[in-house]
Image (tube, helix red, strand yellow):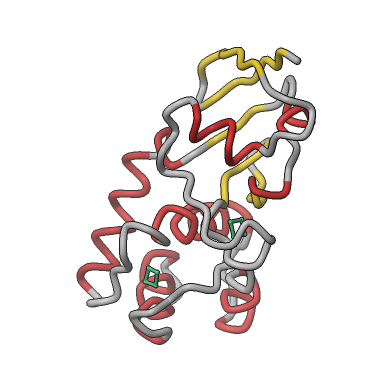
Length: 149
Ligand code: FES
Ligand code: FES
């Protein structure tokens, strides 16, 4: 089936199989910020936005994305870099494997939560499991980035 989506602001069309998942479609078409760590909706590495809401692209059939607005980190360079700089300043940067999904979640959180509490931030991050570098440094960076530190 042929699907048409708005990918990072540009209209594109992809040929997809009926049982193909969006993470695979995006990667097959050069969107390499989308990573896969588990393929079973457990790790959050494949987080992208559909209609501005974070979703796990390993669990969304590509045909269900037809006609939707899809955002990946390729479309959010400036914001992603701003947040990455805060992570670095706090010594809490992550590896290139898990960073994109984590950053997509934090940028969505910034849009969705107004003055979140620490508990709300932690809850929002529940789906992004891989934080090998620790937890407190990232929490510190997120609070600073959201202006709630
Ligand atoms: S690859 Fe999608 S949640 Fe892990
Ligand atoms: S896999 Fe990237 S910090 Fe754990």
